[in-house]
Image (cartoon, rainbow, N blue to C red; front, side, top):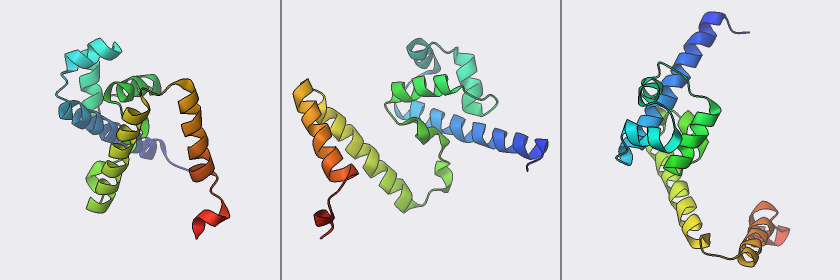
Length: 133
């Protein structure tokens, strides 16, 4: 069982990690606080407090920001300062592949999308024993 103080310290640390990741993603896209405010309807001073780790962000706000940046919401919870270079490279490769897949399927019709989903489910989610050879 954690004490109130330990919980408070953990919460502050998580807020700093989330805030740092939001700032990193925002800066990588050259977005201003004002631009984020307009896109997700969060006041720029509130966003500033979140980025500084002085306030937490609701799940709804994090989802809006992740959609705005086109990244998975769980990226905000990873302390990227402690990732090894191999882990960083792997995460970048996964993100690059995810974006490439999104571009490839963007113009598919419903039938084509259903086919792609079927192929993924058959080969990735439920691989046959023969695929391990």
